[in-house]
Image 1 (cartoon, rainbow, N blue to C red):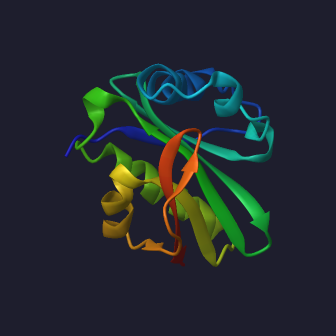
Image 2 (cartoon, helix red, strand yellow):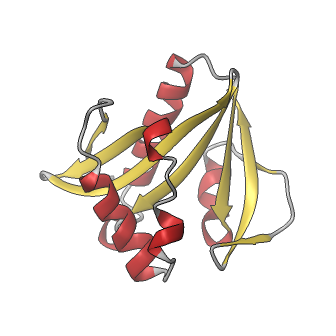
Length: 144
């Protein structure tokens, strides 16, 4: 397992390092239109950023969608850092943040090729496969 420094970015933080990771993963690697990727919801979210040796390598955001439910979005890990444990570190930090926000349930839309990753973290698939940004996804939830 590769330990990274994982932090919740302050509200006034520059989000560009998180956007760089997301652009690399979603726009460059997966071909998602940047207009879809940068969706205007970032100001309403808490952002987690992982750095390895000072380099931004993973990110995710958490939006509170009602007083007890949070939605995890834009989970992205640079290709060279996948299967290193950094994705788990990011998700662990998001879940701690959700606890700090007194959330009772987390939801996410997982790309089907990483559904098993989220299952190992305790998320349950609650939908059939659907398309989002041209990529197959499933909805998953976890009770906290």
